[in-house]
Length: 372
Image (cartoon, rainbow, N blue to C red; front, side, top):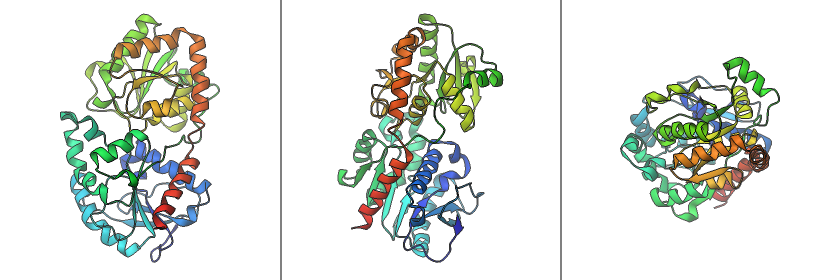
């Protein structure tokens, strides 16, 4: 990747700042990494420039024909989003790309070039509630500016509906581009032995991946695990992902591993008896797809985008019914034939979701806007 200061007129400018800071370990970081990989595989990297934050360390990027531009922000959080709305437009006018692809709701108030925006979800408005007031306050400006985009990319039809309903985006401006599975998410030979040696997990375990905030229903997770142990077999509950201040105190009964690297996550998926995913709302639900790719059976609530992603390759139960979720996990634990069917179906379904396919659709979106 090279630096370029003067001209980007023939390039799309992709906001790659989610690869820097805390976002790099979240779903938004996975999205930008995956899209970059897909653009390289499609041979489109020579048509793309990456935008970074000059005040943060540069992230690793695969060898490619990308060029880089940087901007600097004085503020973070809510003030940073207001600064983004007022300052990024003039900075884009200086860079002058063919098109700007915003990968979050940090949007320019006035954009001097065509604007494509990826909306991962509008959960603060879809779920509402007091706990999400802070998120609604933080992102209110981005939601208001969303309708000014030339095209809005969403990862699922459920999020497409939310973009129209809560973002007031005309359906003609919305395009569904499902996410993909990163390289390496596949059943890992010897995973059980490595997990046992590293974490001392000698019993079978059920897994949860993600930040255990209120939207992920931590109490439902604990209830489902208890039901699975009562009606199925005694298993450990393992949590992988960043900590959350919203996690209940009694979650200490689980093994909390915190953030884990890619190879360890693949091992955890591969060795788990099943993934229990009690989320009440997902824009896409990447952990479900990653688990299926690794041959890990999935049980989840039937809501938002999850039926689109999982199809018939997972056991989906009535939204919010923790008892039914635990009973589904118990079935997986006690019925080897069912577990084997879910493993095979999950692997087959996950193969349909690749970052190269996502990049190809994104390139089509760029052309659709530029051809206007």
